[in-house]
Length: 229
Image 1 (cartoon, helix red, strand yellow):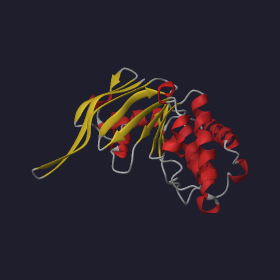
Image 2 (cartoon, helix red, strand yellow; image 1 turned 90 degrees about the vertical axis):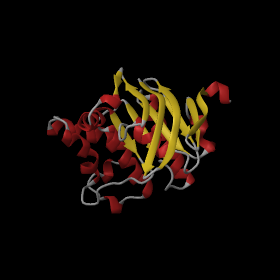
Image 3 (cartoon, helix red, strand yellow; image 1 turned 180 degrees about the vertical axis):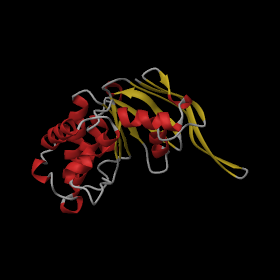
């Protein structure tokens, strides 16, 4: 479904070139759970931006469902993101002026989906997240765990092919973090591909495949779970 081939990313400032990613090869099939492990500064965020169609590589190619993403315009990549990709970050990044329901519904406003259908999707996700009683609340009235659940529901409302999760438990205590990982795992069990970026070795057992990133290079490349166990 998603394949990165010899991806490299360089930034230039004057005559100085900094290589952030070097010759990265990653492949994830529909419905798989891939974990990208690496410390801060290893290039995880840059890799997420490229794999998630937010940025383009300096070298290499990125294919999604047989389409070369690098050849698309910014407008075309934006349209594809809105249809196919969900994002969950360390911070929930909810809009303070919108209710829980309105925050979840927001991505659907960019699609031609009728109000009744939007409302039904939001209701289903609120139920799955055990947040129906919070639908009219505002972000500041929620716990950190509840805010992150709303962020996950917002990512899922478009029914994406893949979810990118960047340190999704970073602002949570261990119990709440474990619950968020359970929620993401259940989403993956239901058929949505999941690519989770983390520095925490303790959670890698949740994934089906693992790559390890260090200083922009892959130390482990598409290792399946049976091999690291």
